[in-house]
Image (cartoon, rainbow over all chains, first blue to last red; front, side, top):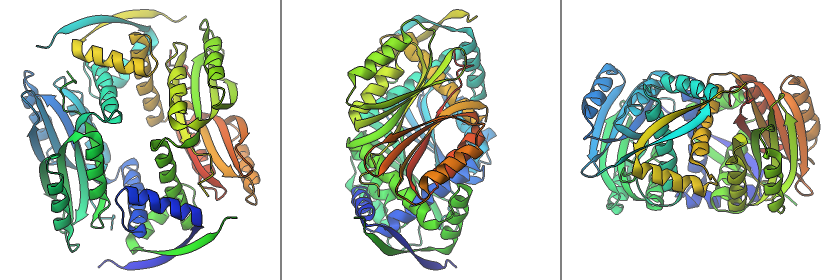
Length: 138
Length: 138
Length: 138
Length: 138
């Protein structure tokens, strides 16, 4: 069961006002939630640097007309079976496909799979989005 | 119809050798493809900075037990109907959900939608992955 | 005169513990200071995105043996007189120089100057470090 | 003695044109130099990830009125004598100082020193700029 605690932070008034203004610009209605998100963001970066078990999304943009494109993508994902949770394919236009691959596992393994996919000749662009399994991220 | 051109680049030999070594580490078998990907990466960054029409993935990690969590997410996505192409929901464990939202539209509009989703109280962590519609990215 | 205020933040205990652990790893002895720095980091990013008056450091690595290297660097810096506060030159070895250029001005102007310097043929590598004039950053 | 080699790259014409346009926006007059810089940027990132010997600049913004501010900064820099090459101090206004610290050494050691300085209470904001000693970066 999660246990909420409450602690106080002291800060120069001008700093608090500036933070409230910027947070509101980014959609926050609540200072505490903006601070919690800043903290969670640092934890996620730490989990990836430390090579812990993490979750993420590998996004790839590719041209499905390239010979062998889909086969190579499918094969690499099957080799990394333990990491790949789910793949969604979006048809952007006649040539371009966007694929979102939900992944989970050790940070280094996930990074290696992303490298393998992004370096393929049929893949025009790709990126690995780092997030967390959420377990430590209450 | 795409038209291939060929041009030559001069470079210090040590620089070429070092680049080949690092590219191989990242999965590239071919120097030209590693250079094309470096170039495409700069174009994607430019498209986002210039506020052009782009594509991307908004990833959010959230706890579906939070009251109102799914409703708020669904409502924001419906308000941004023109941008959201497809959403995939992954159950990470009993509490944690990973959602991958494929988006397309003007860079600023997509960034605003990501802000709205990520700032929600039920959303623990989120990130916007920038890619391209692929049209200019041959 | 700066006016300190104190406010309270509620957070899941596990999140607080994890943040304390990661902050300590990065040298913080005090949770409040770690939170203030996270907040200041977001303000600095905002000031640059909004194109406000900022401060920064342009770092360039170059080979002073290249014909015209120093002249071009000096000329660009003089054209941007209003921005450049101070330049420090470090001799890394027989060929390589590291130059740290303290700058201050509108974010876009500073970015343009950094582009001009980094794109020079004699400059091997460069980067613009974003910080603030400190006025709003109490 | 550096040895120049020349190799050819094939690329879709539209991609080359788009890259030339974006490079020109960033100050490049020459396609080869824009490509060399993209390659050098990847090598620098690799050197830092691999923990090699690198160079960099630690930038800190601080309020010199805080009791003990300068002493702590000086002490940490002396403890890291092997790393710190040169420090330049800039007076931004009555309260705010910008310090640029040229560093050189193993990536991890440099990162630790930057953490120590940035986490100090008197330091409002700081950043570590990654560059190279230039040896491999011809």
